[in-house]
Amino acid sequence: MGELTLKEVSAAYTDDLIAFAQAIVRIRSYSSGEGDLAAFIRDKMIDLGYNEAYIDSIGNVVGRIGNGPVSVMFDSHMDTVEVLDEDKWKVPPFSGEIRDGRLYGRGSVDMKGALASSVFAPLIARDLGWIDGHTVYITCTVNEEDCDGQNLKSLFAEKGLRPDYFVTCEPSSNEIALGHTGKAQILIKTKGISAAACRPHKGVNAVYKMADIIKRVEALNEKLTARGEPHGTIIISQISSISASYNAVPSECSIYLDRRMIVGEKEADVMREMDDLIEGIDATWEIGTLHATSWTGKKIDYEPVHEAWRIDTEHPLTKACLASYEEIFGKQHGDYHVWLGGTNAVTPVSMGIPSIGFGPGEDYLSHVSDENCIVEEIVTAAQFYANLIRRL
Image (tube, rainbow, N blue to C red):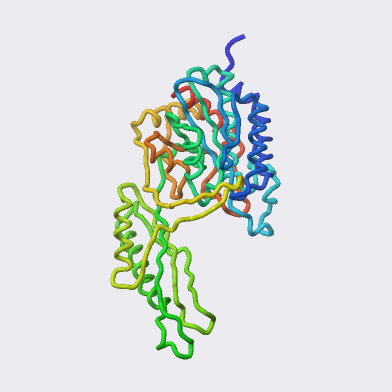
């Protein structure tokens, strides 16, 4: 009997892989509520024969297969955004139902389909003898939706991990993703003086102060857009005010800004923009630090400032991905994918770890009603990951 092929070994795991993907979609895992899913994934890794599988202090699941000198990490986050419109779904959001070759449910695209692919990929590689010389880490991380990268920062510090290569399995329609935009989230505040609404001249209205800043934000976005493609953006995502009552002059007003950065824009450039936005106005700005608590009870303090990143097409990791792609799909790769949103890759990128992306699912279906992922993409993603291990 000849040696088994990648397709043959993959086929032996396909039913279990798809059943696993359905099962994890059925487990509700909103941010800070991933505990049940984490235990389920860890136990599955143990059942599948991982060399090691554990949950760290922040609640991430970490699985390891192999113990070779070349290490690669495949990362997927467990948390999903909430379902606030269940009555609008044609397929129940936690059914894990498959219709017309698509897996339906919250997280099927972002990103439980990819998580399932990554869990089974090293098994395929192991059975084909491709694990030799490699250490493969599969990470299933927490609180990514609001605090991307903080989960891995905690894991790397706690366990002393530093993989040679990093793959974020975010949805890219099974195309190679070279990077994503950067972001800075900023909080601007204006202060006023409270007074009775019937005597507004006795106070200073903080909202009126903010009105001029709002106009400047809009003008800045128009300026960025005028630079042509690609370009950065800035929006006001939240606004609030504080007053003693509905009948009082507001004493404080706050806006929260989301500034997206393209490759080449630097953090210092954005900080200067913030100075310009408040120039001549009695206002202050600060990084819009977010605070969360993971499902294990660990506090998360997240400073949302990350520059854009993009791996070079000539990098050995990119070339290995291209070779794997051509072997799996039988064709040359087309245009590369670049995400408009953030991913956990911000942490390994900041550490100088070569990072790239590839995952099943169309990313525009993330966070929407009737979120769904092509089942065949889940299967072929596992094959791609397994083949990439061999190529590194």
